[in-house]
Amino acid sequence: MPGPIRLASLPLWEPRWSQAALAAKRSESMRAFSRGMMMLPFSDEERIFPSVTKCYEYGVCTGDVIRGGSLKFLGVDLAGDKRPGNALVAIGLDPGTKRRYVIKVEVGAWTSPKVAERIAVLDAEMNFRVICVENNGYQQALVDWMRHMKVPCWYKVRATTTTGKTKHDPELGVRSLEVEFANKAWVIPAAEFESHAAGCVCGWCVFRRSIEDYPNGSATDTVMALWFARQALNLYAAPVGGTRIEGLNAR
Image 1 (spheres, rainbow, N blue to C red):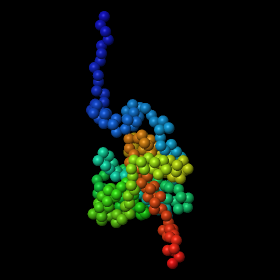
Image 2 (image 1 turned 135 degrees about the horizontal axis):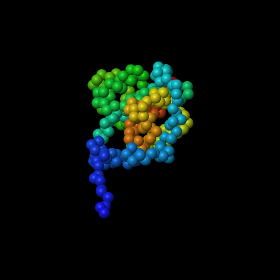
Image 3 (image 1 turned 180 degrees about the vertical axis):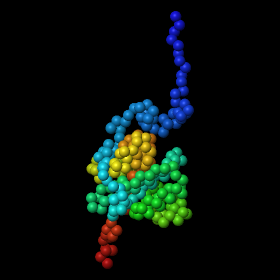
Image 4 (image 1 turned 90 degrees about the vertical axis):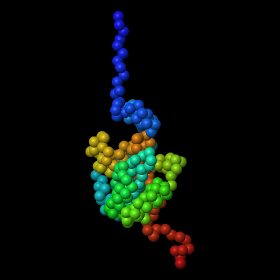
């Protein structure tokens, strides 16, 4: 009696996911690969920001914050050789309550002139105190483009120096945002994304997925842009005239 017939292997992943494409995806992040390709969900213990959902608030109008008297800052995560996307995250600081508002999130695989153009549009709308990028090299490149294009807010660009150590330091790095989320020091307007489809790729939805899944998600651009904006806020949010230098003020 003949044995069972062995069926030929079917290329179920081709042409979208060849062996080479799957290997490349796995090399980017094994944990993200396990979730996206092997359907192994993240556990709450793996998330760096388990408290971020406490900051989702409904009925918040970002337009009111933009038009109000809050200090505003922009974080810019620029594309690199291995990552084509750019992320812009604008935040505002309520002067009375000291709560921080996320008021705009934009993502895109833009050219350098397009990045400069988007920053100019946002600054015209919000008048940022500081525009923060990752390091001095990026700062100079962005300033050069903005000056070349005659973008008037070029002088607001500042750099925050980052290394692997500072990014992941529990007190100084990205992880320190969790303390602020746990204390509900942030307001994230849920109305900006609550009705969007599951696969939406708008800035707000990319931000939501990235920060909820960090550091295991497939993208971290918007999280880093938020951190750069927070760094700018911490360094430059003092009120104008609020610094006193002993001896100098007595003259």
